[in-house]
Length: 298
Length: 278
Image (cartoon, rainbow over all chains, first blue to last red; front, top):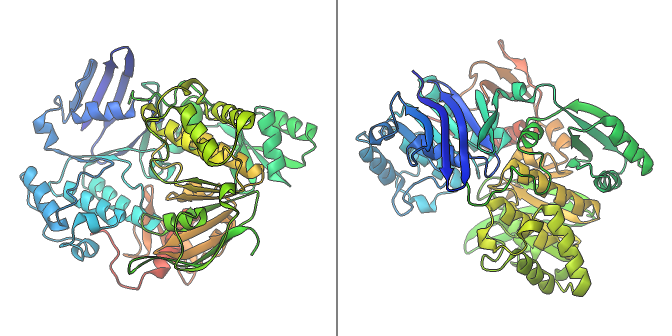
């Protein structure tokens, strides 16, 4: 049985269909990443799965039944705001969270958390707060973890340590659903689900989703001139160090534009990155593209 | 040092040393990324560069105030003003007048895709739109030094691509840009990376230089090889081997900036601190 089984889910707010026929499953032991631009329907889908919103159509099953107070007790949710009491100590937060789920607060904390057991959460740096939030959520051994941008604001080593905790939960059979905007988080997932305009537009591993998509890499002598020339020609280039990348473009066209502008550069097609592919799936990233920035929908 | 920047910068809040001897330089036409977690000192460095706070020590190289564009972290637009009014406010604050102010506002609105939202209130914009408006406000007067505090935090990759295109455009036009981020993959867009940790510079250089200077080797394996020197990348483990040996069952990994920063952080840890998730 899947931990999460969403089939044909729809959610309508007045005229706006925020989630439009979405299928999604999370199996035990699996880390699934949910990606989407603002307004893609990601947040609404998360709220449907958490049971915070009723669907307008389709079915949502958690542990084989509709979301309810009972299913809520079997999952652990870490929102972006972490959901900790800042005016309570680390230990008090852990006891409070455990009590709410009828569990016992963990007796053994990792040494880093043990050292701040009596500190107020408000006084801790964000990286430590995130660890407290993880420890609070894991105390009742949830079968499903739902994490919203779990490692933003944390340095790379701290981020790696948080992911180890997530992986550990997955190895012992929990399913994990992670909503994120960041590629270094997406990279940690077994499977990615990409949403755009309320629908699922891609599913799979990073390499699978990128497929054989390409970008044009430009190695110019003077990047600023190359950037300006491409910009004038309506070829949006991204700067990477002192090189430029033009997603989903024709190297001959890029070469011709640079030559016409008198800019010397080495131009070639290279495999697209996951982020480039994601932006293309989300509506191209052109100013005013329809899939981005529907204020207030998600 | 050429360009704008700081030398041996110190910032203190009461008895707390937030920045402790940071130096870096950003010439025109260049983007430098300040990378670090929450509390690393990024915001303090940027506030000094923008002239918002005075340092406790060190020297600061920056242009006249009206040649600086500063986008603070978080709420940088007026929620009860419209998009147009926010830009007009910024134009007045930076002394851009008349047709030039209108021309720049039009250009930036087109480039940010905010043209259709001109009369919407700041408070009615999505997070991504607000960040784009805040960046447009900092860019309006074509500053020589652009100081951006986590401009892409909390926004999606589509808006992020647009923001970075604007930032690159400002650098292409000659600006020196300093941009803070907590994401290392994002810093790879910059020509220079300055990694901060606990108010000090952990690593500095181009992404390629920083990666090349990593001591020892980093290996990849299916299982964790060391309680402290191993970390997860996806479903595979990476392990730092300071003496360059490749343990049995592991292969040499191709390093990226993320690995280089993790190694630098590990190198800084006192041995046996048990920095391992329990």
